Image (tube, rainbow over the protein chains, first blue to last red):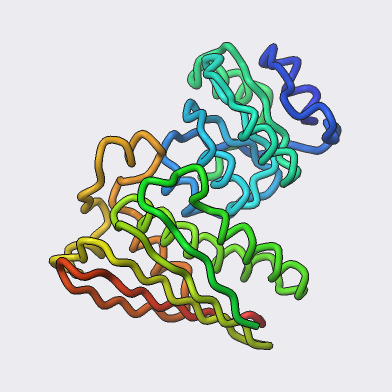
Length: 114
Length: 138
């Protein structure tokens, strides 16, 4: 599915409106532990996390993850948004819990990595 | 090409800046993405380790046509038992580090997994020196 469809599905707020929302998302990984995120290889993946700090975005950058959704409407800093934009990382914020986000995406055919 | 970066204790906002810069340079050099990822994941974990545990540190990067050699050295508390530190799940990280999404005892194993060669030496009370070497061609 496309990122713009994910936005709608999760009633999410787009924090990087300047980036292309037609890109494809096929896989998802959900974690608040960045070292865990750093152990995998990713392609067309969205990271679902409740960790709203600069390291979540840095981790996406190092892992070549192009999409990040922050759950539970956790506050996102301008620094995070700027870093995401600079690295072409589509950043979303959703009021839904990580469990609900994961469930909704799974139901729509987004696959787990393993 | 030689590069040098400084790291400060507790500076989580800037942790990853050196890795980001190295990633940009390797991209410009047309290094395959899969090899770039290995280098920057290892370097990023090493940066976080210094921010999390040491007083201050420095990163020295040497990029040649087919290899990258990185030294990360710090004047921190050192590692008492390197074998234990290499065990997945062993950690001495603070609550603050864990709140940043790290400190689960995966750093050094992650670094080792993503490098062709990793050498570590440490002296308690003095500091730690980590040497990482990776190929830049498939």
